[in-house]
Length: 300
Image 1 (cartoon, rainbow, N blue to C red):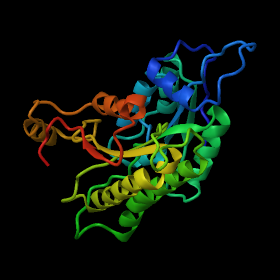
Image 2: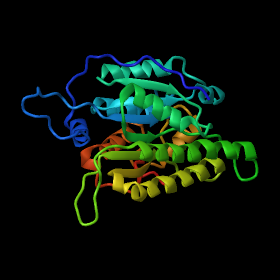
Image 3: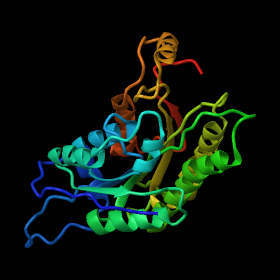
């Protein structure tokens, strides 16, 4: 398992949007004495997995959160893209990082093989060392190779569950062990949730057995976090973005899915990013423990 660094951020940063400021202020200690000069709150840090291609959903989420005032740590794994039919995008991590820095974010690009059980600890170590404590964890990575009940191999099944399920559980667990934001609600008392977990899922099943089954398990793990991490002031939700064409569809599939969507188009990474941005904002804290479909009304 390897983790490689990419160059990080420029020091010049524009003023933050109100949503990110509110989350940052909620995680800050009490206001300094009046005699000390006032300083702007630090930008909160979001850790986003699966940001390996500039046209992918993960990159779209990273751009949106950077524009909303977050610093961004993100993971990618080039060998996965290289063995898929779309191929690897040379220099993607560096170009994505530069885009985020242009939006005012500090960045940490981390290459990580999520099949290794030690990867989540090393990812969090790297993100915290370079950017600080993680406030939002967004899981948009995936192992996705089509196969059905009769032709799925044991190796493929195990790999899907290692990446989509086990790694997601370990990332959520590591986040919970390290989270140091404001505590959440206590029995009988109102509270503010400052931490965020958002996982991307899918409703694929037929002809896509290991992917669909491993994503179904991911759903349950994430929804459990909404209850088991509530005492930390953390919300956890699952988002199903529906059919989003990021280069993996052929013309026949693209046409069929477009016709099956009431709005007459496929989803875009930006569509998913807007919902994730809302869930990560202070305004989204009352949405918790939900599996949300953001799919334009596409039929299952």
